[in-house]
Image 1 (tube, rainbow, N blue to C red):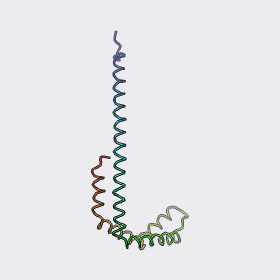
Image 2 (spheres, rainbow, N blue to C red):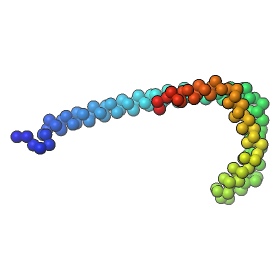
Image 3 (tube, rainbow, N blue to C red):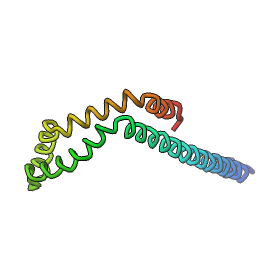
Image 4 (cartoon, rainbow, N blue to C red):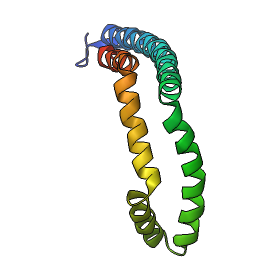
Length: 132
């Protein structure tokens, strides 16, 4: 006599199907983890090339940026007290947008975009072509 749920064979088939799905899911996770690691390695290499290019081709701005960064941090700490996070944030943003550091950083970014466009393009293509 057969019971309503389909009996033992039905349960065995269901468990077998679950085991197969579990195996497939584990394999998919393993494959995607491998793809992600390779993507991150490749992206890291391309970003390093871009930064090296930017540092080399925009050397004057980079040197100026380093000195302005140190000065900007000192000046910001003097001007913006850290009593409350909202006040400090507002003061920092205002101070940053009016500073020479902001202008030089903007010039440096534009220089990198212009003179190292091939390197940036490679990064963009990698990201667009990735399935991750």
